[in-house]
Amino acid sequence: MKELQPKNKCAGISKTGPCKARPMGGSQFCFFHDPKFADERKKARRRGAAVKHGLEATPLAMKAPEGLQTIAQLMELVEVVLRGCIEGDVESKLASAMSGLIKTQANLIVDFKLEDRIEALEEAAQPKEVDYETQIA
Ligand SMILES: [Zn+2]
Image (cartoon, rainbow, N blue to C red):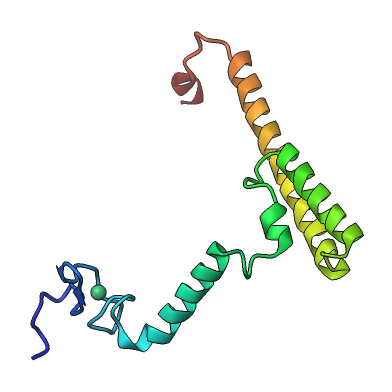
């Protein structure tokens, strides 16, 4: 009775019929139907609900800017952390760890931008009519 469904489909039943998800390695079921993962699913659901209701989310997570891809966003984050330190919401250990990460991210952003600029400059500086393939050969 093992092969009721094709091998690459989960053996579970969803609300709309047989589950079409791929089973996980070594199992007949996908993550959502495997009895082995019932506990993990419950935990994940609880985590999701807590985040939704702002129960577990720290003040830091709620105040941090959504993106951390620009220097301006990082500056915003630094301000949040700094305020958190002053107000006692952020422990000094966390603040110093974040400080290192923020610096790393800032450096990466700057490097990335420099790379883009250099590429653009190189492109602009290239003589247009040179055939590089024949030059290299
Ligand atoms: Zn399934």
